[in-house]
Image: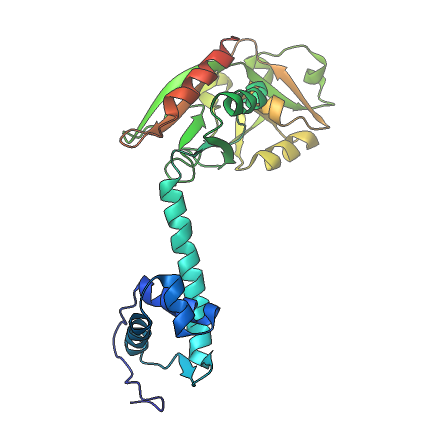
Length: 296
């Protein structure tokens, strides 16, 4: 038994959220009576809950006098942790219950190019009850597998049976060059024009691989993992990039020129979502984007 009359515990203490809420309420309200009113329980229940937390932790958390309740040093430390834990739990509950009021659309490099602002405006007008939020996540599933978005914009098929997807549109394939590159003087380029260059690629999220070229005319490659780094290297003239048209709309940079690659296939723009747990607004966003890409 310690000096405060509480027997220390051994092993893992079993602490419940209701106990942490009780401790925080006592400190915030300045006493057991007001804490009981806030929590909607009796004063005796508050006393029992606080005592059970002290037993679980093997430490005295509060000093009680006839007029005031103050935390012990341990109580201060526990209360600080308790506030963080309760805040995380509240955030978790909001996340789990906000599915009908928020739609997170993930993307890796570029969102939807020239259609991005139109999507935001049309969505706000047609579905004001559901907030649309764009989230950039440089991952193969654009944040879907990581739980960071509800629906993802991807530009290559997801080889994962957990997800469904649909093509909503096509985008031209463009070459990104240094603005002073001789090829930048042309209105368009061909794949053969790039075969002697260093091609900067992102294997996790990119749409371009050396397989676009014939086996005997493939460019050298250098891997890069972030669109800002990609643009920086291209601007120096040390490499070129190939990307979907949306990148040119979202990342207009001094020193960078984008030119269509006239003999390269277009890039399919897909929306992907969890097969067994689609967001309620999935079909609605598919319809809006399909219409935008079709020019309606």
